[in-house]
Image (tube, rainbow, N blue to C red; front, top):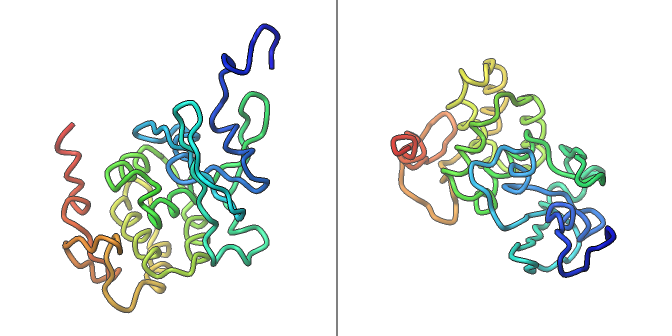
Length: 212
């Protein structure tokens, strides 16, 4: 601690703290967007990936929320890759890349802040390495997640300057049967046959953009 400070008065960087809660901790999901400066809204929950049996807790008004590394990634030597180090208070903090974060929040929207927050946050990113996005989503071994990523990229095709090959590669791994954008809620919507994905109208039309 700097001279003249006490444990009670010292301001602790929550991202730095979260990165030290497990030896393999990686800041992820909405917290990664926030750390990269791309989150539409700020959150008092810091989410991190880990293979350890960590438990959530609250400290000085911030929730620290561990999320298990997806099973399909645990057997990989780099746990799927897509990680970078950023500096916080002169110390390294491991965080998922924007490409991996795009996939992760679409895969598990409960950790992304909901569809409006996810869409608004991702739309603030001017460029994604789409090859890196595709390589990573295929590692998750989830056809539904592939469809969600394909839908998002197709919806933003012009802004992201996508090539046909990017979408075609994903299309080859789309579900063979219709699936819902969010499996737990099964919200009705329109079936996008290219992706075999049922997407709610509010997401398809980005209804929240009408209220700004």
